[in-house]
Length: 248
Image 1 (cartoon, helix red, strand yellow):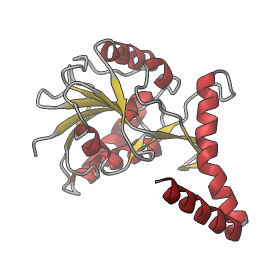
Image 2 (spheres, one colour):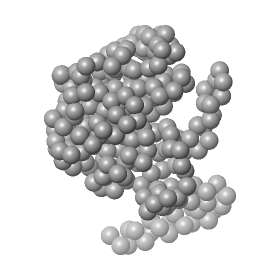
Image 3 (cartoon, helix red, strand yellow):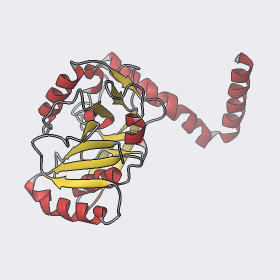
Image 4 (tube, helix red, strand yellow):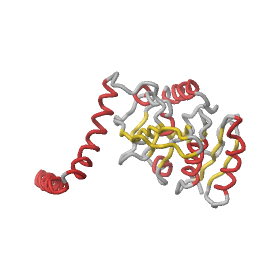
């Protein structure tokens, strides 16, 4: 398979479920070959080895490496960095690598934030998922409001710093090096990636936060109406399609 991407997966907590969820998401990516380096705290090393071993037996085009290598795989066409808890639809990496001018332009996927509550000994409980606004050419400032933001970015090898990030600050520094060399483009379509919501503040503090709220409202409001007033929703949807067809 000619298209290979190196994904560096880091765990910022001792939560095994988030790690396994991200590993499974990488193992099920379609249309690309994945080299996944996995950096975890000592408390998760045994779990990471066991989980990677199980997933390798599935036979997918993914190679797992425990630890942080000195650099990303030299044969990789692009590089990404995920925080444990990040998941993506199966064609996310393939669509990113197939996007226009992928050799020089960073591909940024639309996302949803996922807020979870830890449950000892069991998978975390999902409190809510919210959509994020993404501009056509996202700036680093816009993206970095999510600590795990690099999970939505696929960086061409020509622009990727040779080292791999671990901590939150390293993620920001790595991204700053990549963004300093050119533009980033939003991938079309609905959210393809779910990021763990690791923000310390979740109140409206900027115009970007307001845009996020409006983006989520545009998605959630029709769903709310469909659940509570299905007949009215059906009629409004029919009217919308009729007006759209007349406009064209």
